Image (cartoon, rainbow, N blue to C red):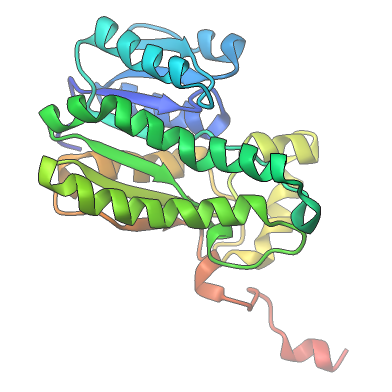
Length: 258
């Protein structure tokens, strides 16, 4: 894809499974990458030529300012922000105020603070931002409130950012993954990808869980020159999850005759 070689991307949450796939995809395209993550050990292990790491807690403004400075100092510019990092903290209707504030701080506010800190660089380079929404931001999910609400907020944030940053030449879009082989899926199943695919199958037209690399490809497209006239939108990398609505990819009527 055009417009990626020689550029610089900051990947918040770059030490996660999906984050690593995004980092690798950018690196292969010739983009230099600054990984930012709270997991210092995992992040540092990913460094190589053209890929650096800065420990960052996106709940702390000083960390965000230090991340932007470290990226400028190391690579001399900032072209792309990709906001993969998120919290899965969610006790549904029983979530106390502190958990609401924590989830929104990590899932929404932190990325805004990063945008503010890097805005001048993005404007100077006519850069792009890719936020991470989710299928969870469009449907009700039993027992989950914080994560879906924060992801829905990200989709609205993407539209607002796209409008107000367009005069500066900054494009802002989002990707909304379906079930993807990620840290949380790995942890919940004890590393059982086959089980994850089997549980995901009825909820996705393509009958499986997505690969991190498939999400990364959409991120790269949105940052590339191929997407130069795309802003304020969301690509659903969800294997057809949202296309089904309340349906599943198995026949319902035969169940009435069982």
